[in-house]
Amino acid sequence: MKKITNNEITAVILAGGKSSRMSGKDKGLMNFRGQEMIKHVLRVVKPKVSEVLISANRNIELYANFGKVIRDELEDFQGPLAGISSALKVCFTPYLLVLPCDSPLIDEELIDNLISRMGETGVDICVAHDGSIMHATFAIINTKLGKSLEEFLESGGRKMAIWYRQHSIERIDVSSHLEVLTNLNRPEDFNI
Image (cartoon, rainbow, N blue to C red; front, side, top):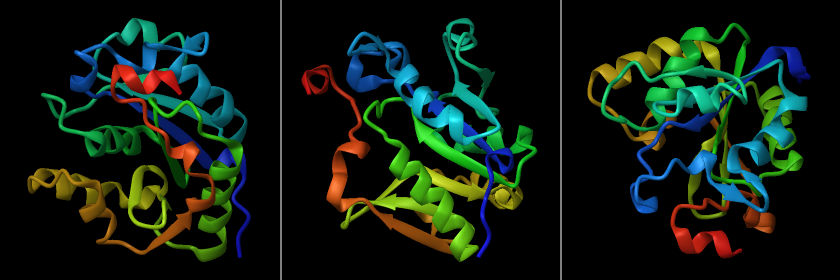
């Protein structure tokens, strides 16, 4: 069993999507309970890691107020794996913690569980699971997988779960507190 320390982890907050269900509004910058959604995620993740990267493809200057911004190398909003791939290319720690910008109810417990199980099991990827399905944008990844992801993307792959299943995975059961996985994808979701 290995204890993973903060200085061994870089986080990437995924904020590079089109937000098509939000009429194109940039979700990470939308206000939720008095502040931008990305701030809710940052508040929880910053104390747990050595560096925070923000994967964004627009509003770069605004996101730069919250951390180091990286852009997808693939054009046309190719999905979360494109952001993760870009992060893996600039990440110098052994682990990359992946979180979405549109889940402002995330808590320390989920992050702690992902990190501790990664150390205990030594798998390639630890990912949140709700008892039925994997929530692939809540994960910690061994950064040695960068080449594998690059090859997967080059072959046309875009589905996170398919790429994850090519590696050793530990699923973290969060079925007892599903609210931490809440994604705010549509305007009506903001009424929680």
